[in-house]
Amino acid sequence: MPDKLTIRSKVIQILQAYTGGVSKSMISRKTGASRNTVKRFIREFIATDRSLEEILGMSDSALELLFRIVHNAHRIELAGESLRKQQLS
Image (cartoon, rainbow, N blue to C red; front, top):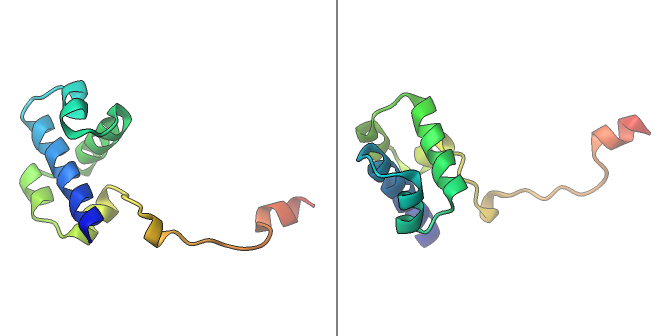
């Protein structure tokens, strides 16, 4: 659980700083997130057309879905050849 809380708090920090007028490079330095991560979260925030207050009120799982946050614990490993490769043969 601590990882989820850390990621959630990082997303919230990024969005609060962005709505406060802080530059993306400064947000990156303050949060420790890469500039590409900051840009991605901001781009997805804008695309949702929701207010910061709505985002803050969301549950952890809703926030993860909205920002497509993927953890290794949710990754599914598949065995065998892909169907696309089989069709090409």
